[in-house]
Amino acid sequence: MLLIESVDRPPSAAALFLKLSEKPVPAWLDANIDAKNLGRYSFMAADPFLKITAYGHQIIEENCLSREKTEHRSPFFPFLDNLQKRWRRPKESGFLPFESGLIGYLGYELGHQVEDFAQTTINDLKMPDAFFAAYDALIAIDHLTDTTWLLASGLPEKSESPTARIRARRRLDELREIVVAARRDETKSTFRKKTNPKKTKQTTSGEDRLEANFSYSSYQTAIKKILDYIAAGDIYQVNLSQRFATPFSGSHRDFYLHFRNLSPAPFGAYIESGEHCIMSNSPERYLLINGDYIETRPIKGTRPRGSTAQKDADLGQELLLSPKDRAEHIMIVDLERNDLGRVADYGSVHVPEMQILESYANVHHMVSTVAARIRPGKSSSDCLYNSFPGGSITGAPKLRSMEIIDELEPTCRGVYTGSIGYFDFSGDLDFNIAIRTAIACKNHLYFQVGGGIVADSDPNDEYQETRTKASAFLKALMTS
Image (cartoon, rainbow, N blue to C red; front, side, top):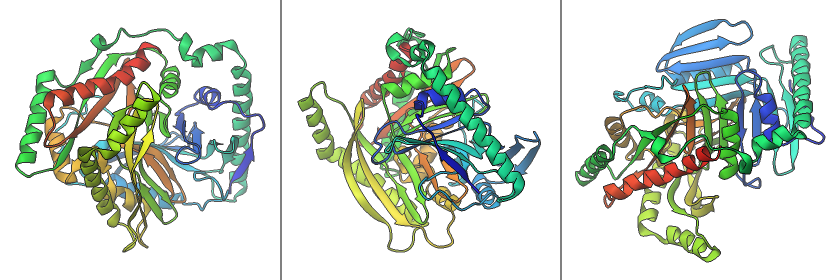
């Protein structure tokens, strides 16, 4: 059962978000650009009926209605598969990709449950390896048609039961109240001040406030070790990253609104999971499943935007024609083809887009699309398990690259380079690669940046590239 209705004169996404986020456990999957292709739909939700938190094989399932908690001992991906089977419902709207289900993240360290090797990095932020909340009421925004929808499924009540219909109607009423309140707030000057980046005040002095989990010399030493591994034939490429931290006591929600305005992206996300607030501005899709169709879109290769139209075009062409970037990109496409091949129907893996240019506010990216048909008998959780984490942020070969990342990086990545998205109870899903992602925790903001290390990488250049990438976060912080 699904109740659904459109909204007349819908408020902006930002206004809806600020009002909805007053409720517990708010989440926003934020498509903020490219409505014709990648960024057509955004989804918002709050006040879930179930929360799932995983630390390794310890999984805590909390019923948000009764407050009862159940502990499980299980690898996460089989647990996710069983959870989806427990709540499985076919889609009913016929046009929305997500109607009811889970919103949350898969942390990078879940890769230890996919590839069997010991974890040595320290989880100093005490971040769960995975967090999901199950939502029965959603606000969906179709940016292509400029339509806003309210949805309520009646979960966790049994489908089509009188109690499910009563719950769905009540939840739909709550969403209508959110819309009315957001529409009212949108007209107030206080709201305009909150969301106008030109009128925000500085909260940090800049780069001198940054603390890194690598020193300059230790990062260079790590890169030199990777170069030794490459020379020895262990790997072709490793994505090494470092984490920065800065004091932050401002509003997480206001910061995210400012962050998304500075650099719109099709796979943005905001999730409050308890002690951690996750704010992502990702341009990269990790995995899409729609029925038996599966797709991944690896990014490998980046150039800055130019100061003039001609310089901008030249930088884009430079990226597309670069032998080094093209070689690295092909390597990752082959890795992704192999990952999808584990769950694909035989002969169905193909590359409909190869090394195309996608341009965003601050950078050009080289992107490909790898797609397939899912083999009968393979579940959506099987697909996640067999391709996680995304190859564009590990290296090649994947297992050896992940072992080296774990050896050289001192702290857990957490959600960074993991994935954020939705898991519809029908089995469909859409997850990003969690790059350009910040974590707010204990009056600090943490963000991680890195790059692919290959045979001709220069340690100093690679270190400076991480500082350059960090400047995007600094820009957001200094004007938020």
